[in-house]
Image 1 (cartoon, rainbow, N blue to C red):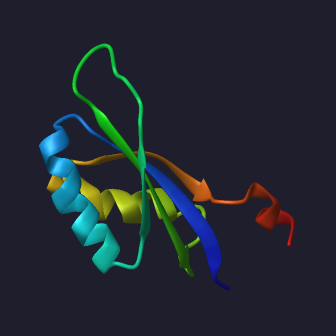
Image 2: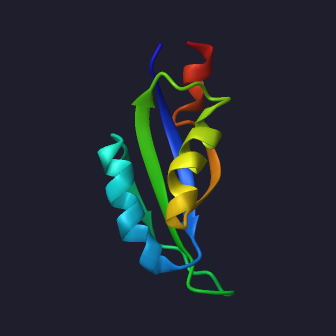
Length: 87
C-alpha cells in the first residue's frame, strides 16, 4: 500500500544541494527548500516528499542510500501525515 512519506535532508556544503535535488526529483520526490540559519556553518536543508510503497521503517535508509553519495544527510524520515498510520 502506497503512503505519503517525507524526509528531512541537510547538506553541510550547500553546493551539494542542487545536484542532489535533481537526483531526488528523478526518483519521483517533490522538494521543499527550507530557510533555516545554522550558526555553525553554511548548512542547507530540504524536505523531500514522495508517495511510495517503501515502509515507514525503511524510508530513512532508502533516502540515505540516495543522498549520502551526493553529500546529503537524511536526518529524519517517516509518514508525511502521521494520521495515515491509523488508516
